[in-house]
Length: 138
Image (cartoon, rainbow, N blue to C red; front, side):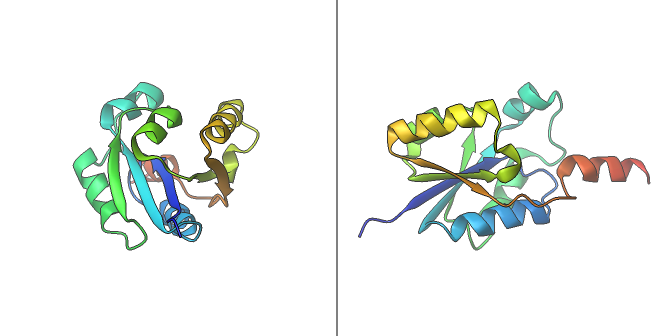
């Protein structure tokens, strides 16, 4: 029987319970989980700010999580490009993205490649952005 390869991607800055929940839930759906950690320049290109925690440290934190089988550094948000490199069977994202036009397009692209987009429960009330805001209060 062929192993099901899963993939998820994120910045994973200031690692928190929402990140852990996504990774843990993703691993429940696959035999081998690859996690893409976004490069600093990529993050800056869409968030207009660099992560607080450097890439090497973010990747090492994610690599240390028992649910993660492999970590790759990603320099693109184009999931088709990532699929061409690692050939995952399923890609996992939070269900807060359901209905988003970009992700609907990605879902169709994945289907054409024989992969599946899977929405997992989003952890509400926690995000790296929220943590940044809280830290400003101190």
